[in-house]
Image 1 (spheres, helix red, strand yellow):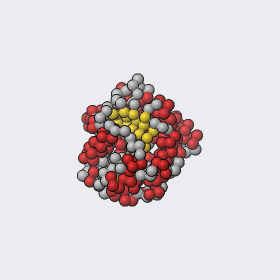
Image 2 (cartoon, rainbow, N blue to C red; image 1 turned 90 degrees about the horizontal axis):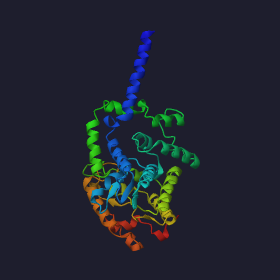
Image 3 (cartoon, one colour; image 1 turned 120 degrees about the horizontal axis):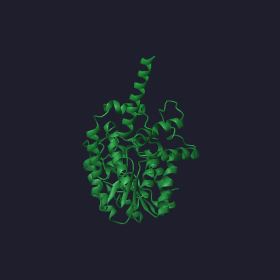
Image 4 (cartoon, rainbow, N blue to C red; image 1 turned 90 degrees about the vertical axis):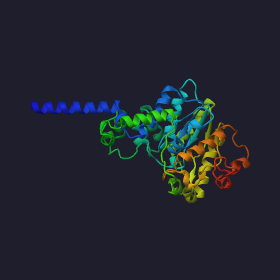
Length: 358
């Protein structure tokens, strides 16, 4: 009996030590992308944001290099990011004494239309808080859309219990990361990545190949239909910006030619109509007209249409020029496609504002 008590006490103590390690030392074992998420959280905590922030998904995280822009910008876009994470980051940014004067938003169509990596990255990496999960729960019930809140792979656990385990960093949830990192071997590499992401003001690369001709998810969407929960968050984000009198711009990231050739015109036009409706509703929200700039395959580094380093440099240089000028005010200017690699094709991807549906 004594032996069993010792065994039980040892097991409990060991589990408690692992739990303490998981809660306090994530840099030692988490996946490498965790360091980039952590850098963005640190900049938000420090209110080290500058004049503008970027909110969005991994394409924006990889494609926009703040150091190449004419103003101080912090890139808060994250891998798998959707309007939920963008809203969470925005509320934290607006709590700072010096709020940004401009917010650049960039989300590809797929990140309005389907769940992505909310639980696997945004929650596990600590980018969203327990309060953010409560807000998601309540809004999911209001909209009747549990597609993201319910998630997948929670093994039939009651959702309230799942939330509690996630917020408390229950060790079994991190088993894969602990196993791959052997508990501590990622510490040095992750700290190097953290330092690099902080120095780059949140920019971090994804694909680095010298080209990709793989068709990304955009090329497989038959139409554009946003999830109700993501639409609600997008609306909340724009309403919050409007209430604070802050200008925002929606800027789409380029896709490769392979994806462009497979994109359904109906999907592209529905996406344009959706954003145009919000542009009419919120006067400080501006949508740049080319919602699917298409660049040669050689500028992309992987199958997800992340620009490689050369492509990111070119895109950021063009964005820098754009930020120094006024947004297009006429249909003719809009059709020039200021961020398109091939301006003569830009008009094919633009639905004139005067003709867009709501």
